[in-house]
Length: 134
Image 1 (tube, helix red, strand yellow):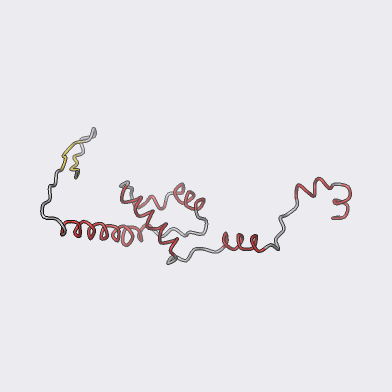
Image 2 (cartoon, helix red, strand yellow):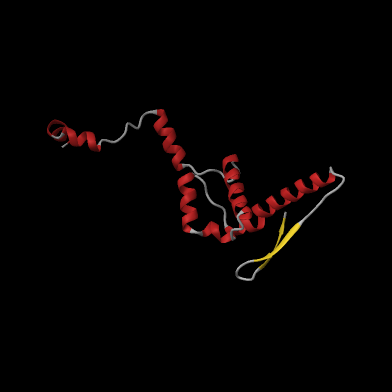
């Protein structure tokens, strides 16, 4: 059958031919696509920290990590990454960011003589009250 296609339908063979798989680069790319990132790898830690920052800075609910659109986006960006659970972000990742931020602020305050703090109290159009630090 292969000989027939090669002799009489060479244009079909060119269209449907598979890539050469014995090149080292191809094999490595294939392995990279299949192998999952270990959760303790630097890249996985950076991604997890970035997701935690997204949740904290943009005031997103922890459930955002369960949303299909969010999961699909992460799979497109890094197919080897396994997203931790909502519970991990609420009990570990975001509290760790809070501790880092708190330590940084305490360090900054310990190196200064005076501090001026202002705040802004406002009400949203839906009559929810807010106090914002400035």
